Image (cartoon, rainbow, N blue to C red):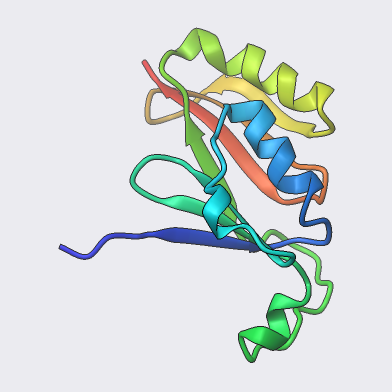
Length: 128
């Protein structure tokens, strides 16, 4: 079976945004992969790669134009529903903005929807 190794996020600040996610979720950095334009945080079976603006040229891509609307959302599972609210509060204290929740979803999880300091959407989720 194929596996998803990375979800990559293009960021403005290659230091601050990975540090934000590491602090909120206790994720370890794959230090051996660190460069001036890349950092990776280990999440278990996959990792979140953070690419600085210089990575567009390296990858042969055009930078995305600023556009309204959400392009993606990261979802982080925490072990228990009673951990969603404190984790969301920690994220807000570190610069996130709470969009919705915590609330019980139609499919039975407890979830909070937030934006990180660069306005990317992420969710904190726990099964019942």
